[in-house]
Structures are given as structure tokens and as C-alpha cells.
Length: 120
Image (cartoon, rainbow, N blue to C red):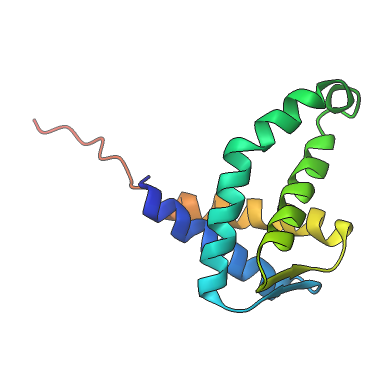
């Protein structure tokens, strides 16, 4: 999947997630694109560091601590952008789950189908 398509899918997931979930404020779709870019940047550079630093607690919580890390990433995006706001930590956790599910669905729809027909 191309980079632009991934950003578009993530932006749509952020936009729909903010629309569905009370407690998340988003100015509009251009802000959703910025949120997707900032979250992508934070997930690429900061999240691996946080995951490594929290391996013991992640292990003892059977991976559920990763939800906390995702919520922290969302709250950092909230503090970095003026047109995006999340009311609470719990809302950030719910928003993280919702955006992940919506992204998974949209990527499944956008994924090109492989043509497995053989010409005889």
C-alpha cells in the first residue's frame, strides 16, 4: 500500500473515530490528515523506544500495557496540534482502539485483490 493511501486511510480512521466517540474534538478533515501524520511519526520513532523501556510491565500485563502506550501517543498528538483534542486518558485509550479497528477495516477494503486465475 502506498504511503499516500496509508495516510488517507489513517486520516479517515481518525476522522470517523472522532465523529463516533464523544470526548474527541477534531476541526475537520485537514486536521485529521495532520493527526495521522503526527501519530505516524510518533509511532515510527517514539513508540519503539517506549515499547523497549516497558517490556517488563508489558509482559506482566500480557500486552495490555501497549494500550497505555498508544494512548500516550494520542495524547502527545493532542498536545502537538491545536485542532485536535482528547478529553481524558480513558478517551484516548478508546480512541486508540477505535482508530485501530477502523484502520484495519479500511485497509482490508483498500487492499488490492490478487488475481489467482491461471490462463490455460
